[in-house]
Amino acid sequence: MDNLRFPLTLEFKFSLFTELQVHDANGQLLAYVREKTFSVRDEVKVFTDASRQVQTHGMRAQGFMAGALDWKAKRLIRRSDGTEIGALQAQGMKTLWGASYELLAPNGQPLFTIKDDHPWLGVIEGLIGAVPFVGDLVAMGFDYLVNPTYTVTDAGGQAAYRVFKKRSLFSRRFKVEELTPRSPQNDELVLMGLIQLVLRERERG
Image (cartoon, rainbow, N blue to C red; front, side, top):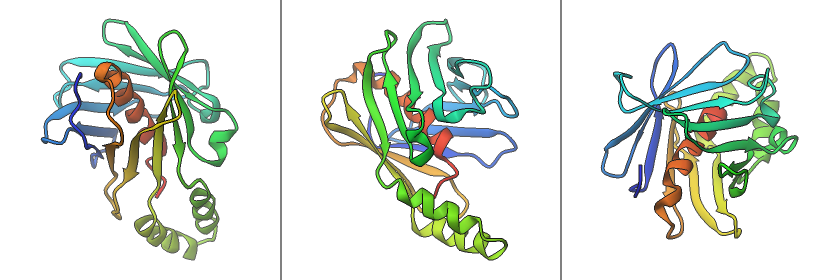
């Protein structure tokens, strides 16, 4: 997964399961993802294609009930041979207000920070959706017109990537843009971390 060609597209499939596929700027399929549902601990498997014959990575929330306690979960990212490449760490109570994560190296060193650019939009959306009947219809329009964006900054505080959800009523499609020249050595970790991000944030906007 070295030398990713941006922008990347992460799109959810219409399925009984939580599945998405990742394509690069040339339309090449980079990953096919399925998330295990109805579990107290999140588990995600990444494959080379839709046949799911060859698994490349696995991601799993650390700790019992970690999937339910999403606001502080740490999700370990490993290759299929068991090699750990890093983790996505939710930043505690901050995640209840808006998306706030750290992307960690295998030794626990923070390499990137991911934050919601406009966390207040999630609060407004929640208030609208709380109104019976009418709130659901208004929330659909809100979802179409207002879509969240997330900025990924490196350890030096420089914006490295931007993730934004494409406007749509039914589709769940995200785009990832590269903002600054980067070292491709972190491509694998960044891609897996952003897959986890959109799985966590797909219902917003």
